[in-house]
Length: 450
Image (tube, rainbow, N blue to C red; front, side, top):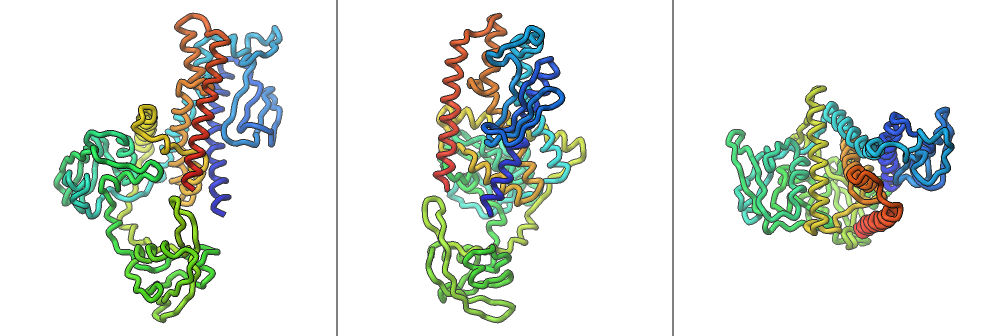
């Protein structure tokens, strides 16, 4: 069921992003007098197609990993003399540049709209208050203390813990200092400098804040081993466990909190265990065969139960704005996400960020499904983030991408004549190798994380 859920929201998210991207090319091309032959969402075999009254062949194809707008004169087409004025290759270089850049620009506009919508609805997340800090950690050595509230990272204000994570992510690979502004005891403002010299980040499953020694205050709350939900078809469900059950013993060993229950369960994949349950004041005995699954390359046990996390509500805050406030926040959010994409790409090229951090369609699908389960606002936020990244990637000066075509046209504008067909063909071949190599690496990383 999880696979179907993730796949559906992956296709939905990508469908929205690709449609808006191609609409950017399509709309500007039509406005500049270029004849559009095909508007396709997806590649490969058409699942649906229709010839519009405007003469465009509209297509929905089987492979939802992109799309294209085919224009008259974009390739070596036979063009009727009467249609020459509508051919893409007969338009000025500046008109062609406008058509090419319209796709990524449409993705940025979509991101602004989505972030605006998100802030109008209100985005809820964990506050920026920190919990117990290990004095030997990077944060501890810098002076961060229990109950401090982070108000800014490197001078940029933060309101939710996810904002702290995003700001810290921009510093991956750096060895300088990270500046934190914190509020202590609801009144004292302090500026702390965290040395990143010994900051270690796991490329495959990074815990950015954990590596600095930062944890949210809710992590210090002891969670009772009380079941709030039992997933259907899991070992717990088959054994008859119910919401409200309090697990008091695991193989005759007392269970103090949820973390201890998880630790005991993980160590017993495929094993028969005995649980003592407090159900409405009555102790009951259950025999359960612990399930097994692969987690970070190792086989781990699981029950299929979830804890009661209602206590976290006291640590949640909502960021919400008026019409104009939300628009300003949306512009800032889009700008910061674009800057983050640029910084991380630069660090990937320079080697400060490992290629193992690249994610492919499987990770995107999991992100789409996970955000959708959290609610509409979180799905909107996810799609906006991917839209910014899609726009950024398409602007990279790599032949085959919009940025590659843009590079060719900019050279043409400077030289006064287009690059030779041979140079463009070689560039496209190099671009194809680069793009497919990166895609293969991203998919390999996805599979290695399963």
